[in-house]
Length: 509
Image (cartoon, rainbow, N blue to C red):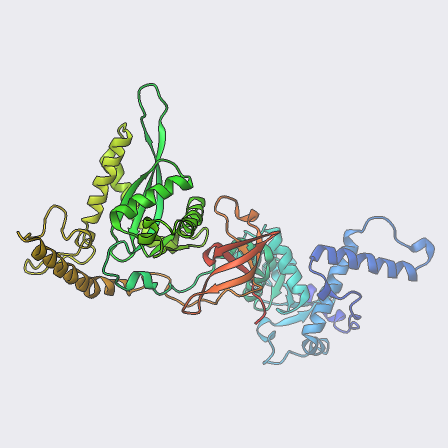
């Protein structure tokens, strides 16, 4: 090691490196940069040499190493010019310099190295004992970090990249420099991007303004299929569950759908209307059967206005709205009821062979079971009121406990109206306050904006195959927060919730 330092002294007076032959800021690939620079340096050398002394053929390792040293010296000259001048004069660097704690020196090639405390570790390579010092914010340092990062297939991690760099180089604030590149790396951003989010929206009017009638505002969804027997020697047939959920009282009405086409759903809808009354508002997923149903219902309202049925029902109209595609959480109020209905039906059927009649009976039993559940807190005090259930709003009873009756029909009707008014007052006082708290999605997030580049999440495909999308239009809610956006994916335009979009590049403000 003493001999090594003695050789260094003779190189400290070497002339400074020439200006860059090529601009490193315009290159990103480390190996390609070194090879290109080596070819350029060979061309310049051949132009100055005699014909018999010119080099030809493939690049040699010595030429590549010389080109790498040329890049390192110019990089250090750009970042540590003052320190290099002092070291050439055999003076110590200033105490305020970033290199003061590294005890830098110039080797026999004019390269700035870190002396460190491992100078007696003769079993280590020279570059590990005295690593080359590189600045943090320089194009060459960025190229080296990118080279080691991609060498690890974007999956090695920050520590592995740092370890690979430390085998030869000492980068100032190396961990921060590696983190900066990992944030810029397009491949890593594609693999690590998370879906956009936003604070949970306020409850819509359809869930918090009492209409004093159950099933005035309804959410609709399908479940199934259920296989039923049609007779001996005949194939089993698929049947479906159509769930109507009251958005205010959380009551359910279950109907048997014989298929998933529009006509079957319309039959289910009118059986529901005949028993529960015509709803003012219907919310559903963006299924093809619901889309077709709303078109036919609108035609029905327009075309049969001369009949008595239209006079009694169609002039009221049904406000039908659809949740965005691929956004089941927009209909969580009725999706959870579908889950409860399926669980109750499977418990009733217990996996047995059933007919259509058995399935209808199971649906009726599940409906009564779900509508008997409490929706408010159960008190341990026996003197308190019984908890509210959906059945209180439907027929004034809790399961099989029937309300007191009167011999006179008018008095009984008045009594029922009083009880229903009491039930709705309790709904306002006991049920609505429970809906105020946000159980998740409590933090504000940046709004998705027009021009943002997104990754369209597709659960059925691998992440590397998710397509790129650009936001064309946003749909802010009443609270001015965006939760749905229209995006362009290739030649298509799609409407998706923001939790299906992973931000990659934000549009300029």
